[in-house]
Image (cartoon, rainbow, N blue to C red; front, top):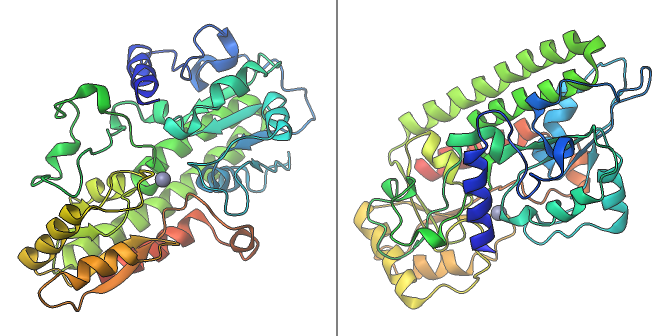
Length: 348
Ligand SMILES: [Zn+2]
């Protein structure tokens, strides 16, 4: 699957200029073409609402922000509902039908979305706009960092394209939504897609986009300020590490037990010792985990440090939001504000 991903990534770059085709969709013509290629919105039957299907919560919430107060009364569909994790999701027949019949389908386009290719072949509506967010980000997409928890002395540098010794193992990190800056770029593309399907209300969407971008950018500034005020510039995760984009936005150094959202759950003794050594060396006062972590690895790292007194803080990867949280009004911004609070504590 890693090889597939690489091929897709290479393909995406080749096609980057005009037609950002979704991975593996180059032969199915208009269906998979990028936002910009689909200016002929002949399919938007006047009067009918625009149907939008999204995979994960951040995209869903971005759409909600952009279509707010639209006379079309657009209600996006969220496929990964109630705690379903991005990395283990498989669409039901009903989900496939929702995708096949929608006007706009938005997905990340990473390794976990390899099911999308098959789902799109079911799409009968050739006027469907497909928004692949990794393609939208183009050169801003980052390769997953390989070899965490061992010798990544210069963790930042190792994320740069072309730095890997074994290129066959590299793949794009799909946790793009954990960067507020990426969110702005993604929202631009989403707004454009919606505008093309409903040009009559383009004014509503562009005003919503502008005001939402201001909120994203204000929160981004708060992250920058928090990092500047921090007493350290290093995050150490006794866990997986989906926060590459966030860390790189603010020039943070990072160490983790596993790269990306690796399926590994057991850290080797060598990794524990390495990370505990980093905590000692850098005088870190905290160890980070993801939401839902049992904290075992973080605690084992702490037990192996000199002072054994680090706080353990959990960041939210936003990749499996519970229905109850959505009902209680959680938004992308509110969840990222929670992450900002965690970041302040972790860098204190
Ligand atoms: Zn993940």
